[in-house]
Figure 1 (cartoon, helix red, strand yellow):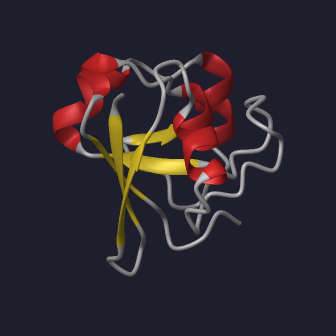
Figure 2 (cartoon, one colour; figure 1 turned 135 degrees about the horizontal axis):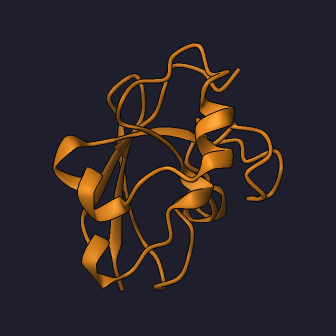
Length: 106
């Protein structure tokens, strides 16, 4: 099973192992990773699962979807490597994925 490294804003790291096909957001919610709210349940409708994908992983996670890009336009701390965790599905190619969490989702 692939693993995800979640890095909280304050520096604490969580290493989570999840089945392939699980979204990064669902992995965080299921494992009580603080800083990922996922208010819309993974429907790409709220942007409360905003993460920063570490640069080495950007190509592997793919491009933002149009709805994802539109939601991130409203995030005050969005960066070039910002993604919504609900839009990234884990597979073996993403084993070891590293994402950083913003200070706040609101």
